[in-house]
Length: 71
Image (cartoon, rainbow, N blue to C red; front, side):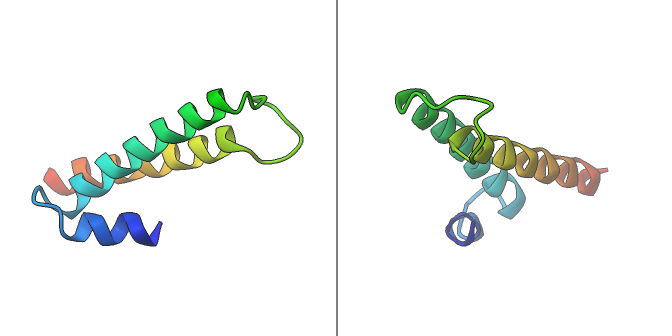
């Protein structure tokens, strides 16, 4: 997460939009890795699917803050 925040700080389109884009790309990466590793969606242990859900929630929260700040 610290790496994403560091890259978003230097983004040319603003911190919030850069962070949202990076979180979205991380969400897609986690889904691809879960498919490639053939992980079960509802496994007993944490896996890439769970990580994808966490990053999706963060992305939605950031997008909500961006929209709220714009109004």
